[in-house]
Length: 301
Image 1 (cartoon, rainbow, N blue to C red):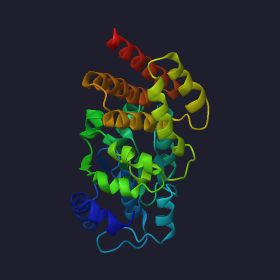
Image 2: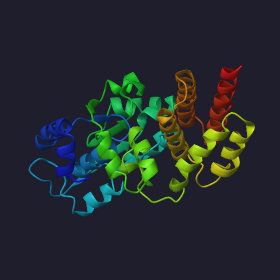
Image 3: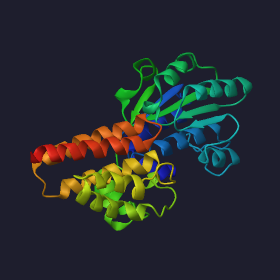
């Protein structure tokens, strides 16, 4: 996403950034936050480019053409540290990296910081609280309230607004047509699917078939053996979460009774949260399927 596109889509955030960058008053720590689908990664890239660029424009944004800007767009470069899922060992790594470089602007970007482990977040508290000269920390999060208060209070918090659902659906051209609306409804945007994946073609058919089996043991077996086998390439957090969101959308469109829908939604919400926490997304699938099967059979008794 270039500067013009970002400024048009996020005018409030763009104004704040222009004021800081053009006046050389960049905050030492910034938190970009907003629901799934907002351009938080793109915002982090723009700020990183602005801080390392050799030839910034009058608003302070990067030129996008120099080596430093190109490297920043690829989440690399001297003085740039980029991490999308922080763990405690990463906190030690980044502090060691910055201790070895002391010249020029240095940028630390930590995406999905609301999903960082408490140990990792606490390990960075002093790094953010007492920044070294020339270091800027950029955090992104879906939920501002999920960031440790001791860290959130030390950041300039900038809210990003999501793209309208109908626009997201139109932009999700890399998804099969029957999955676009479900993904858009769940807040997904084009940036969530940077590369084509043939498994995406199978998600909605799998959702519809699972619904016909979810009240019997074969439903769980279908998910375990045919959709998300253990250690299969598609059995990832992101794909399992997308399946849960697509299933929720399909149930919402169905004619199931309100109580059944509420039960399924509750199981899926718990499933999404479990995907965030567990290292093995297969466990979240097993738990979700078991809750739905028990809930549906309980309603029938």
